[in-house]
Image 1 (tube, rainbow, N blue to C red):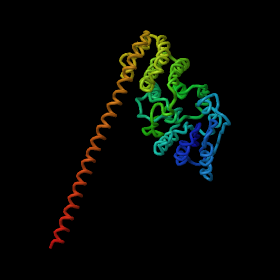
Image 2 (spheres, helix red, strand yellow; image 1 turned 90 degrees about the vertical axis):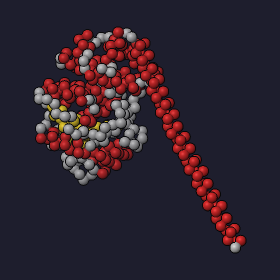
Image 3 (cartoon, rainbow, N blue to C red; image 1 turned 135 degrees about the vertical axis):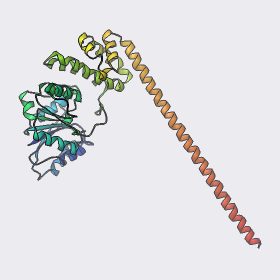
Image 4 (cartoon, rainbow, N blue to C red; image 1 turned 120 degrees about the horizontal axis):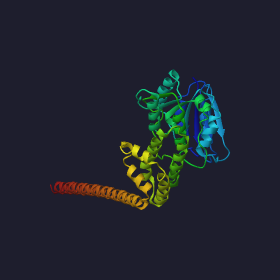
Length: 358
């Protein structure tokens, strides 16, 4: 079975080489490698070209898409350009920060070739039934690099990335895929090494506001109301790390946007999550914003930020105290060594004097 791999990059000269080198070891004859560069101004294109040269003679279909300037469609536009070039039966989506896990990708590939499905993801096998599998796929997460897609499925359903000057478009794509898929597969091993964090690309604070726009986009594509609570759970789960990521200057912008969205959430959706352990940390905060208690939420965040700062100061003081003790220990050792040397020198002088007196 032929696999297509799409890799997107923008100014990733320090990452794209490792990404493509790791991927090259997993490619098989007749596979297709599509790399879409979004008008990089660093050496990304040179690194990509060098990686392509290293694949010569391996019967890999190479498809470079080098854009002269950055596109207005964001990451979604890049992926969609790559989708237009896909010729493989199976598809893997990556960006330049992704490092494929060779054993995990090989295991997933074997599983997919044995039993092709619309969507294959890394997770423990759920209970039987399409509904349970769809629910699990929705809960696993939204990282495209952790999945294999059946190319014809995406094409037949017209599933593409949303395009625009916003971040986190992969969340909407993931929901579109999971809601339309009819067959699912799951493997135990991850396809890629984990990234450094939920916001590994270092997007700015204000980009987090786009989660509320994506919430509205996802609601629009729901085939049934039963999934509304799942979309709300998704938003609340992401808010858990938003709160840890936001800087104080962005607090009020964030709570104003959140309050406007949560005020429109039906009571039934809130009730459906009351006992959900996945959102107990953010549910009270979200409901307070829905009631208009913005100042109380901001005050809580400010206190939490202050506590984190104090914890940082305490950790620094503890470090300095430890360093001070180490310096004191070193000073004591040096003084001890000096005393030993002085004693040795004095003894040698005394022995020499006695020898002369004889």
